[in-house]
Image (cartoon, rainbow, N blue to C red):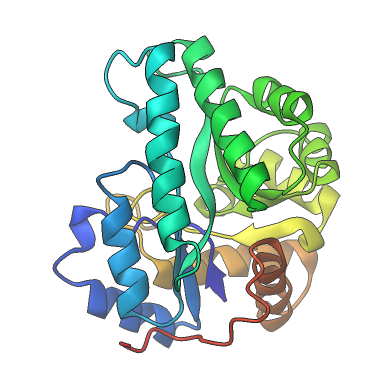
Length: 271
C-alpha cells in the first residue's frame, strides 16, 4: 500500500519517525507522500526523502499556513521562492508534485487571496508538468471552477474528498483521483463512501493525513500510516473485494498520478 498523504515532517513525529515507518512497513505500507505546507517544512520533508527509501514529497503553500495578512503584491515573491526551491529539488530523489494547495472558506484569509495563490500554484504545476494535491473545505465550486479557468491538465489528488457523487465525477472528469481516508471509517462517512463507490476504485488513492483525521476507534490518538489498513477494511467490505485487490489498485493509481511507475524503491530502509 501507499499512504498518499501523511505529514511526517511535523514535530510530533520527530522523536520516533523510525518506529512510525517500521510499524507502517509491518502493516504493508511500502511508500508514502509528504505534502508540503509551507517553506519552513519543505527542508524537513526533503531530508526524510533523502534518508528513507519509499518516502516522497511535494512542495506547496497550504492556505492555513499563508503569511499573516498576505497581500496580492506579495504573491509573486512567494511563487518565486517556491519555483526556485522546486527547480533545485526536482531532479533529486523524492519531489513528485505541487501541494498541498487549496481554497478553504472556513479560514480568515480572504477568498480572493486564496484564489490568487491557488491559481499561481496551479500555473507553476502546469509549467513543470507536475500533479497537485488539493485541500478543500466548503469550496468544491471554487476549486472546480479554477481548475477549468486555468486550463490545468496535470491532474493530482483531491485530498480527504467529501462530497456528493456529482462532485466526485467532476473531479474524475478533470483528471483527478480522490483521496480516501479515515472519514469513511465513521458512520457519518456513508455519503462520502457512496460517492467513492459511484466513481469506483480506479479513481481513488489511500491516505491517512497523519497525524490528523484519526480512524474510528482511534479518536484521541496520533494518526499514522500503519492505520491505513482500517480504511482498506471498509473499502473491502463496501466493494466486496479482498484487501490485496484494494491495495494493488489504489497503489497503482498513486504510481500513475505521480509518475512513480519507474521508481522501484519501496519500503522504508534507511539510505
